[in-house]
Length: 179
Image (tube, rainbow, N blue to C red):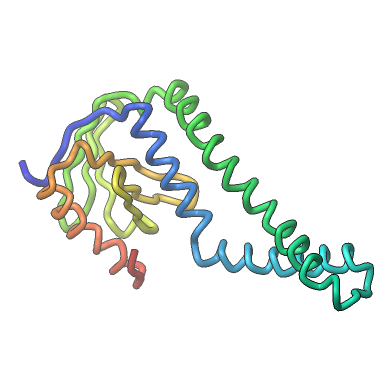
């Protein structure tokens, strides 16, 4: 059937999905605005600390470099923690959560996502998802800000990916948004 796929998530699938989840969250419009405001505050505070309120014109280039470089350190640390921490946490979650490892069959239509696993059979109407994201390895379906369904692209043919994307537009239609 063109509109269905059977698979079991691997630890690598979970890592790829959680990496997409983390980067999507870190680069969302709301988060980028917050990061920008935090950066402005950091520049102002570091500028005041370094100059102590006064600055000789000849020291301006070196001071600006110190302030700008120092203001980027928290963001670099967040990126490093994400790159290193997300795979570790995703693998641990994959080991701990049995429901992630079982065989699953997904089917989709214009109305809903149909899921069958050893834990049950249920349909989730597209309007119940908040949004969806994808990258080269995964498609994420957000049921809430913190709960996502990971669909590994390795389990879908190109035709199935196109078919699923055609159904996913119903998520945006129900929210009035685009991915």
